[in-house]
Image (cartoon, rainbow, N blue to C red):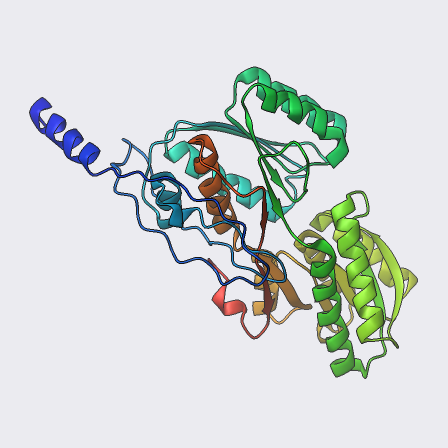
Length: 374
């Protein structure tokens, strides 16, 4: 057991090691090169805390890159990015659309570990895409005295008023996927362009495999405007790049259960379907299971989507029907670390960019090994 004197000296050395500098805000243009990795914080770790997961500092895809939080010299941001433990007793409430989506659930779990291991309190919920439920969750977070709300809106307009009330009480708001007025930071994707990337990959496979002629099904999710844009991007790109292909079925799916059920229905009504393009990994994994259960050769099918979930990558490894997916920012752990990096800046009152666009990373059967198991 360490003596009080040793503990006092250790604390003094740790305190002396801290260095803080002002955080410079930046608004980078599209196609800017990714920021250099931040320095590791030298702040002493909290008792019983665990190392933070490394962040995937977002770099530009087809849109603007995020602010370089780590380059600001802020110890909390640098610590989150590089794995150092930095005590930040922030209280965070997070509400997402649906935790049956593996990517969202994994990111929430990763963020939970980071917040708690660094001395904070974290609560995450889903609203099952129910706007009224989400408004109630926001109000409960405010009543419980959170410092920050992280929200993936079920309907952007419906959450503006409760988030405005939260901000009036000094609560910071981090919005995932929507550009809303009452957010301190909106973490965004160009969803139409993302959809076009999915559709173009599907079209190129159709041309290589079927000379440009194939029946296609689309799994979209028009209940959310951002995902409606993504679905429209898929359809437009297939029409543009494989004009002789035909979209014969289109329905909504946000998770594997829906993806499997809808794809089974597609194949019953249109047995000639050989391509499924999905707005997300949940629908794609369900579609893959439906294809495997169809009794038809898996090699005849192509499934194209976004998220590059562990399940999608495993399907690629096993030479199943998943041919292409787009990793957005990184793995669930990297997503959690990237969000945490910004939360530390917001908690400390540092300036952050109002809009941050996420990196889009194509993953195929040629490069999935770089991401599987990460």
